[in-house]
Image (cartoon, rainbow, N blue to C red):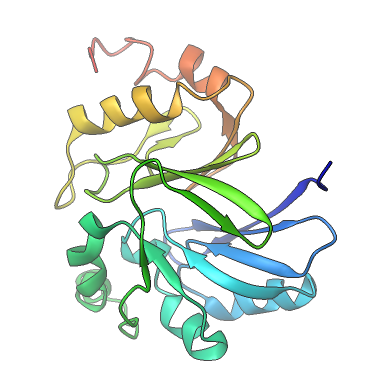
Length: 217
């Protein structure tokens, strides 16, 4: 049996966005999920883990989840993975930052493009890619061994905003129901903001998903 996965959560930048480091216990190869602002903190965490970053995985291309990509690629020459539907957002990331009065360096083009149902084997971890649009056109869920990195699709007790360009509330609710709530109930959901939760908790208590607001989804 393979050693379990290790996950480290970092809360970064003015939007308090979560970045995750993921690796197989006892191994040094490390995946970086959604490196936002403060890339120096990501670097410090990798060093504290005695890790070697091997890839950047983006759940979506909003600036708070990828502002650190350029610095990490420059330091480590590692590939960036992104869903193609979010390429326009990614290519406009510096403009996104400027809209919030922030500055960042434009990252290089992504090296690999996700597809729905794709299975990736990276750093000894097998991940399944689930396309989950609604918060952004190219949002994805990355599922691996009882864990799912869900970006800004769903949070503990809430869901992602849909008032940004490319957002669609009905599409987001459909993505959550079809791509997240169909995972086993004890699946840990590593969210883009705030604490972890799990599938069963959100299915039974999240007011956006239980019908408490009169939404049909």
